[in-house]
Length: 297
Image 1 (cartoon, rainbow, N blue to C red):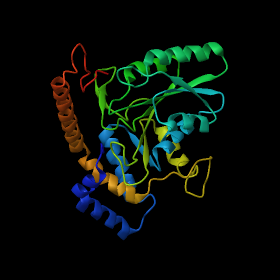
Image 2 (image 1 turned 45 degrees about the horizontal axis):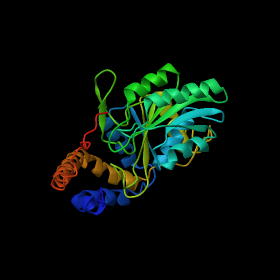
Image 3 (image 1 turned 90 degrees about the vertical axis):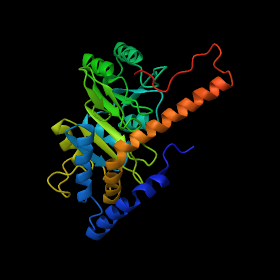
Image 4 (image 1 turned 120 degrees about the vertical axis):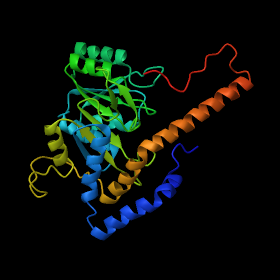
């Protein structure tokens, strides 16, 4: 079953996407062209953050976040057990140690209670320095950031939000304000892999932050640690730039994204209703409680 029909998406947006791609082919700025900066501003406006720095993929986005936060050998980074391999991979790639945290039984997001338990255990053992948390959004639902942010503050930990599977979702923060996925923590990341909520036609990623210094570092790290220009290399970085054609495609998909979310939710509701009817028809509900589509966060 295709949760996101990429062919249908493309046919719906074909004229606009083709025009965007043709514009890139005509101006010829295939790397860091004007569409990249346009997309970064559009993403910042959509999510509600000050800075967005695009990169080559979602895994690099996580690695860039860890680089900015200075994660290194001897550091403990807490992450959920229920996640894609890249979450723990980037921690090990930074020579730090991933500490796995159980998931909430209802939402499958990282469990705040077990998170604090794992932090306390690492502190008691004294072998690693607790440094950061990577919380992963799932199924369109951001993790429980009001509780996670309170824990991060209590233990002086940095918080990274991996919003790749939650982009477009939102929850109420600790002050009662509705915030979108990508706006939580010290740094947030996303992936534009085609199967993600907002995907391009290849690989792509982005990092979100309200911190000016972090944003400057991100822009340097993604281009070989550049300083004033690409030949002024002031730190060790990586080569992780979003190409202009993918940015052009994402601009049109982002413009359609709010309506697409409405359509997806309507389809999900219809599937849920049909499933409930099916269960009742076959008498599978006798003495059973079937979870509804919307699970409280």
